[in-house]
Amino acid sequence: MSQQTEQAYLASYNIKDYDTCLTTVDSVLFTVLNGELYTLLVRRANHPYLAYWGLPGGFIDVQRDVDLTACANRHLAEKTGIIPPYLEQVCSTGSKTRDPRGWSTTVTYYALMAHIQCTTDIDSVDDVQWLPATQALQMELAFDHKQMIEQALERLKQKALYSLVPVYALPETFTLSELQQLHEVILGKSIQSKSFRRRIELANVLEETGELSTQKGKGKRPALYRVKTGAADYRFMRNLEH
Amino acid sequence: MSQQTEQAYLASYNIKDYDTCLTTVDSVLFTVLNGELYTLLVRRANHPYLAYWGLPGGFIDVQRDVDLTACANRHLAEKTGIIPPYLEQVCSTGSKTRDPRGWSTTVTYYALMAHIQCTTDIDSVDDVQWLPATQALQMELAFDHKQMIEQALERLKQKALYSLVPVYALPETFTLSELQQLHEVILGKSIQSKSFRRRIELANVLEETGELSTQKGKGKRPALYRVKTGAADYRFMRNLEH
Image (cartoon, rainbow over all chains, first blue to last red; front, side, top):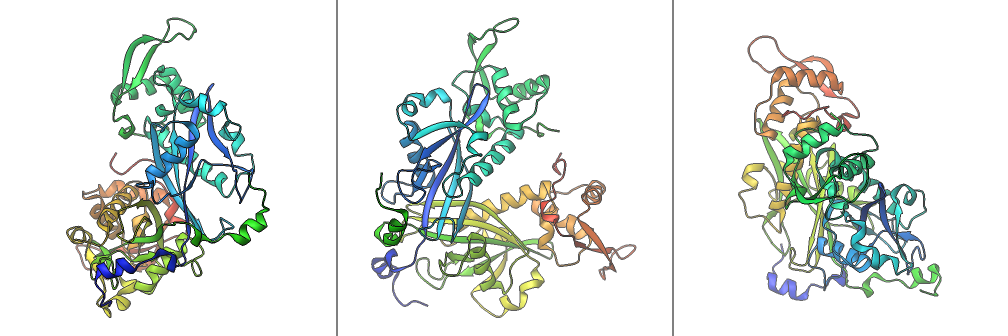
């Protein structure tokens, strides 16, 4: 056992005396646009994978980032101008080979935001774009980012089965049909409208705004809703598919 | 954009030119002993938190570890002599303050193994011990390891609701009562025996060994079972509590 005091040990500790690994935080940011699920890609301005499209993210800034969540949000805000209303850690991936610079670990998050929240910031640059998630998965992306989009999609799909988390990809106000359609897009199948609305009533995490949607359809203009605080934590008693 | 070739960039890249963070992998290893859930603690031989008990784990060895799983297994095998039959990533925790040496990220796993698989290795040393999980949570542990045990317990509890993953904490052969009792211990409540056995039949991931348990009880000696390959991936159609 060390005979040194902890104070002396810490004073002499220098991380550069050790072989460390690269540690990054990458996020899969989703939104919904015209009834389709989109994800945000960023064109890399540096080696490795120069000019490849990949996920918004990067190194932990040991001075500026307080924790992993702050790091994820900082990288997302740099690209979109805002901090997304929903962020959740998916998993970490680390290996000797995933980055040509050396042993690398990345912590993957997924985030949700309304498309309208960040159009201005993104339309003005050519190195950030929203793409349909299905299209992003067809591309040759930087590092193992394709696998991370798949993992994030799988997690979002699970969440869509037992929670109302997808609501954070909608604009501030939305109709119940828009929310149902979003769940259907994520799950890749239709949901019984009556059962979905009963679940929403039971959940009691949405509230009517008192306004009606301007969208035209058959019959009455539908009511607009917004999310109440705490909606992210609500869980259905049973999964949607059962 | 960089004008350098990727080859030149990589040749000149040196991670020590950057401020990096500490990256570790820590595991919460569970087993069952006398109907109670136990977790493995290791006494720290170095600063910081010298002589505190904490989780088996530590730094990624950029030479020896191929990936995060290999790193978790290496640290577990160093303490128990074996690689546990079940290992699952829980989450990552990283912040400026969790380690007095500097910005630190740790990837937490939980693992399951039979108590009998590693008694010899552990009984012979005084810096490794199995403790009831409830007792470990009462101790002042190194770093934020207490929080990690809580997170791992929560994940194991979820798994006990919809899978037979807890079976990996039992010896190679076991009775159905022992498995049910283990699920009950993890969930902290009793389960309907009839319904649990019907689920096991449906799952078809256990097989009879043809042997009978030597344990005494009322009536017949119960049959011994073992796990089939792929049992870890099986999911109940509905959670146990519903």
